[in-house]
Length: 285
Image 1 (cartoon, rainbow, N blue to C red):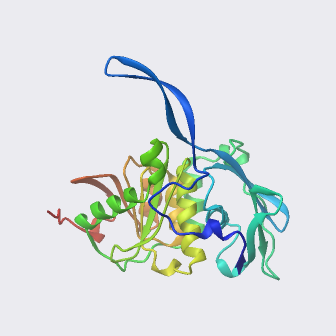
Image 2 (spheres, rainbow, N blue to C red):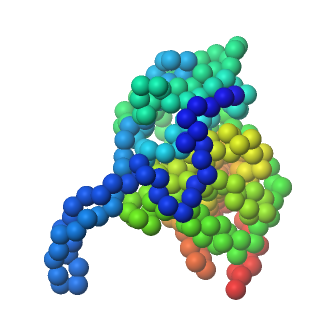
């Protein structure tokens, strides 16, 4: 598999990418005073993903790590099953907002997903929760039970994710996602204006770096919807932890797939909703 435009495959640093933020004028009310000042905000632009030169997906995202986003999204939406399905991936020569994915010989081009992140929802909106859950559980393998983690490790993992969010520190406007191995070592970190995009980016990174098999835990800054659980489950993680609340369908899905789902992961506290046997209540210092 070859990739073009290697800026998208760079290592996350401590400073925002130059095209990830922009300055705007704002009137700030604070401490009973008013002043006009410059404020940093996240850049949000569309990204079109094509497969074999045919439109596949359109999403809004923060520019940067587009190659990873495209790979991760293609995996989590069922467009590919592994990196072996990809012949090449790269930005369109005429547009920084389009990534072209070309499939390996013999790989059949998939149909475009029924749900698109541009707000268009098709027939799937009529599927009830139980039907949706049954379909997803049937299509995904249940998680293995190979790891155990201390609660203190999870707190450290959230801190590690937050330390790799330079755009959030500058703007307060992004979601974070991170993947870790079974020992709690970081494999991939990313952030984006969209929580789905942030997760797709880290999934794409471990695919690109061929470390997918090491990914055992996902930590997210966002709430835990069934879609986030579904994406992480397709990668094969055993633990999913988020800083906010899970939905009922996310809990049901995690339970059915033997995934440990943790919500409200904050300093000194966490709610474990499914399969708590993987977690040891060691609170750390």
